[in-house]
Image (tube, rainbow, N blue to C red; front, side, top):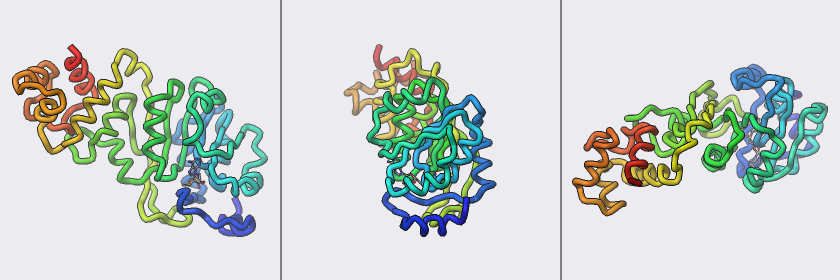
Length: 275
Ligand code: SAM
């Protein structure tokens, strides 16, 4: 791609902070992200926010098909110039948050991959929407703020481990595949970033009452410094002995706090609560 600043200037585009427009240009980094995504010629990719098309072009070289959603209509002529030549690319100029998942997935087939250098203001809603509602997504490969990446991948019994970590672990496994310092973006944001890969295991949740697990996780982390037994007593109006029996039957320590339970323990606890 020709120099990004020249390209933006020639199309009269000033980048918008409100859309999280911090673009990547480093070819080695872009190739590395695509290589580590596990894309091959049979893969369909959903890209959110192609921007100037740097990552999009690399995705098109490797994937069977790329469908990209871009909110900023001003980028239309620029993207036509940078990636318009790829016959396996379709760009939809629309806010991805306003597209219904079933409409979006009609075009994506049964086993697709989501790749995005995400605008940070939509990271959590995007990740949660796809994790909780998609039955077709295989993996997400997303650039997020470094601290968010650490929360996604945190082991239990650490301060980074939270409700979102449990939500991810319920459906799959997250790992950081690349640290990306802020200087690699144009313009540089105020934070460092990391690329996270979340592989989804759809079988994991087949027989689980997800609403109930979600409810218990929310209650547990609502006062994460308090012992879980107290949070359960308050939320479900339980006597202490009943709450303690529940924990014992779920193989959870009586003094445990929210951050000590694995996602499997949250499932067992929610099942025992229903009994
Ligand atoms: N992929 C490009 C890259 O890596 O250089 C650009 C990434 S930039 C961090 C985020 C992109 O997402 C911008 O192009 C922005 O306009 C777009 N975007 C922001 N909000 C969006 C939304 N709700 N739906 C679709 N695209 C969005």
